[in-house]
Amino acid sequence: MIKRSKTMLRGLVTAAAITLASGLSMTAQAQQVFRVTAIPDESPTELSRKAAPLMKYLEAKLGVKVEFTPVNDYAASVEALINKKVDLAWFGGFTFVQANARSGGKVIPLVQREEDEHFKSVFITADPAIKTLADLKGKDVSFGSQSSTSGHLMPRSYLLAAGVDPDKDFRRVAFSGAHDATIAAVASGKVQAGALNISVWDKFVADKKVDTTKVRVFYTTPEYFDYNWTIHADMPAALREKLKAALLDLNRNTPEGKEILELQRATRFVPTKPENYKGIETAARNANLL
Picture 1 (cartoon, helix red, strand yellow):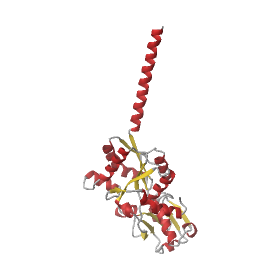
Picture 2 (cartoon, one colour):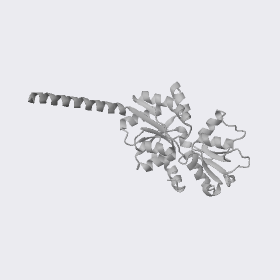
Picture 3 (cartoon, one colour):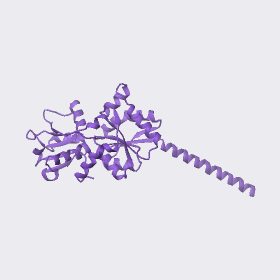
Picture 4 (cartoon, rainbow, N blue to C red):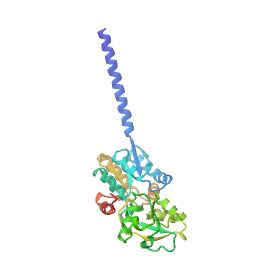
């Protein structure tokens, strides 16, 4: 009886060990998915199209499965990174500032496009009478998302500097949710003017997706730092360096690099640092948006 009990005990221990090993194996497999997200500043279709070649490239460089995980709004992208639901996030400058504040400094901007060192916003209109920012008084004006750097925060900052308070001087403040939606709102006459990311505007013009005989730029902002790829500070150092190197290695002289960088509207990626976004943080606090 005792011998039988010992045999049964060994069997149970062996089964438990197998179950535990299996569980650990499953956990390890689950952790071998590297998840990436991005602020939804364009349509879901466009974001997925831009992401696909980059995800394939990172998968080869990191040696793990890489998945693009879309989110519904800017706030969701912030929460996803600070709660470690994703490993890498494409943020605007303001979204990074928000994530940095929400996480208590636990996020790190890794790289940015070279273009993001000198980024700009544009104000567009189809109304011939609108020629300056002051002409927007009494008009319906659209921003992008409330958390957008180039589609709201910085345009608002320059409006205030010009003596125009959107909340007091506009007849109506609208939020389209995305840069391409702002162009559509202006082109359709839903609003008399809108503010958006200069690179999206330039892309629409190049692709002839907007009639520039009707819709035009009437004001371009000064330069500021904007978008970046951000990680959580808890990412292992080895993985962080591997990821950073992969992004910095992208080169327009290779077919793969050319495709990825063109989709990202980038000449190349360059290193960045939290200090680059102090100006955006100041603008956000001055506008009572942080």
